Image 1 (cartoon, rainbow, N blue to C red):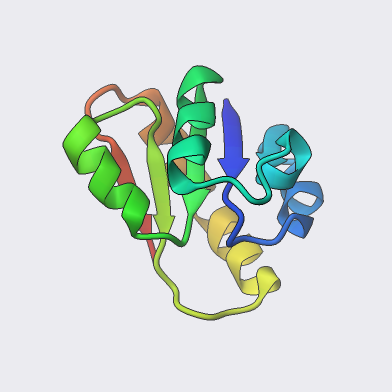
Image 2: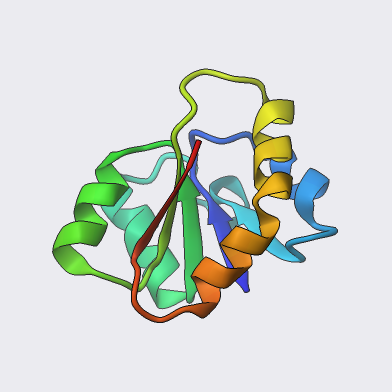
Length: 110
């Protein structure tokens, strides 16, 4: 399962979460650090990635366009990288189930 972290999440999450999500990458690792939302969306779609973001704009795209890519929206407001790491770890099974199922385009975690 490939996961792409959006620009609004710390690149440090990749190294912290590779033990549970081995194929996690950050936009900076694929030269998307200054990309538009549309470019990030297209990269995720073309590379079969699930996109994790704090940006609600991706939710609107998912509602209109469906998936791929699937979107995991982290709805926490401002918080530390550690808190986001713990949130993703706590929801690992939910995330894996969401990725595996075929119907839903968006998973919200808060």
